[in-house]
Length: 235
Image (cartoon, rainbow, N blue to C red; front, side):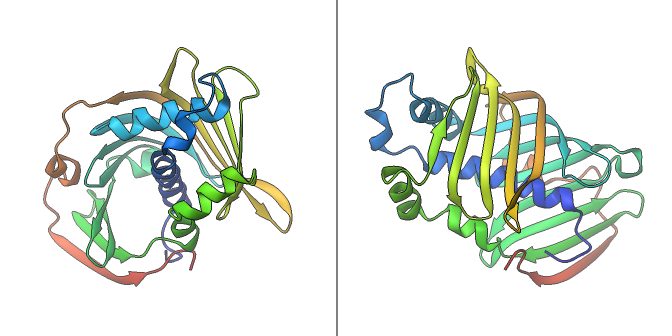
């Protein structure tokens, strides 16, 4: 992604990537585990996410730099995602949409104050491609290179070779694992672990009847379009 793209967008994409990774983890090997084991708890979350046709969430994202961003996130199977910014005030009303296209992904930034839409075609970063390598992930679990632990009720810690993500911490409501409360992603910088982002989920609801076109529609049609060249973030 180019240097003009806010850091929190990378954090949002990382969160979506983590959710996608969780979905692909639900293979029969884990179904034979003790239902109270941490890997089985992860599977329960995976199964719930995989069954969801759409979701709406009210979140606060801290990318580690600047003011945390409050937003409403919408997702519909397709896939397509939408982020409506609430705070900081200077960004209120701006909208980002992301959808898969033939050439990769299309990110659109709607700026209501300028009545402008900024369109960028992009390729997903290398670390996301690594997360989609099912054979590598499965082998990592079997050999113990990827570990799942539950230090306390409602918390799952996933560690191992997950691309640029060294560790992921998921916190949910203990009696409802689909009620995700917080996601933390960590990475290694010169051998020292640092937090990539933290996402607090204030509210989340599944299968509310969202439509694909609804996720991608803007409050008003932009009067001006700016189209950027294809970018390859994290390549």
